[in-house]
Image 1 (tube, rainbow, N blue to C red):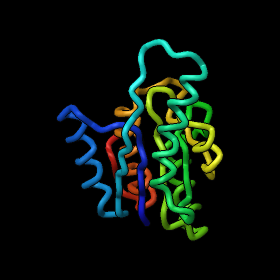
Image 2 (cartoon, rainbow, N blue to C red; image 1 turned 120 degrees about the vertical axis):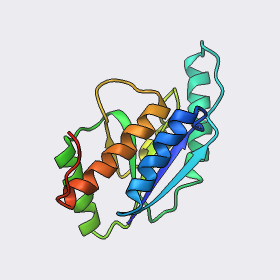
Image 3 (tube, rainbow, N blue to C red; image 1 turned 30 degrees about the vertical axis):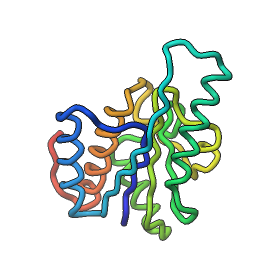
Image 4 (tube, rainbow, N blue to C red; image 1 turned 60 degrees about the vertical axis):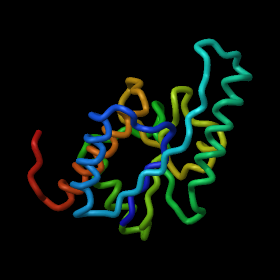
Length: 159
């Protein structure tokens, strides 16, 4: 299985880069992991609704250009489907059994995901009712995917 993460923005701080690398290394036992970073739109603190929509659309176009038609796309959004860790593991297993060999998770920038990206998504996922910066969301997602594979392999993992 291939797990892809298409995300806005680059990890800049060493501690985020190291955390992502650690989970990618751990995940390599279970799946191929690919990270596709797209430039996030630079936005001032105050935008009109039209400017927000335009910025999200530009970012969304860059994301959609990195997604192949055959990929199963899961968009991370606050109002997405919520799972506990065993439930998320079961969902990944279900997708695998359905023949979905390429799962692509999409993480938007500070404004969220464009309507076009949400329309392209096959499903949505929420990591929490709380909002996280995209750098933290990437690490949380990598950790939860790793945890899911450990659960599916009946392997122990710290609680």
